[in-house]
Image 1: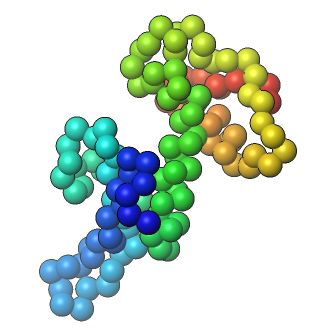
Image 2: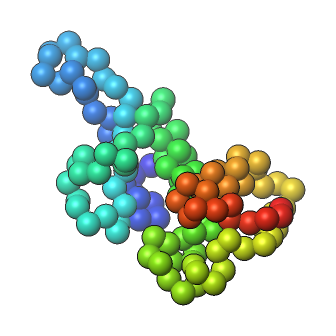
Length: 121
């Protein structure tokens, strides 16, 4: 996978690296282009546990896509657009949009934005 859309995924980290027989833990660290600190492990919430690099990449992208209703309005800054348009009234999705993406938007909207991002789908 590597670098894509401002996202870098580093290889898994061996939690027992001080032991010569250490077992590798399938954990990856995601570094975003807009991260202020660029050191590996600088942010505790950037770690992802997955079976392989592809699953780690999908997990990170799933989180980022779940922020869509907030991020397009300028979140995390308290912008005029965010005040005026969040929450919105309707989310229009196609039949092929996964339930889990919409559910993730709702959960992240409630946790980070303080309200359900839309009233109707």
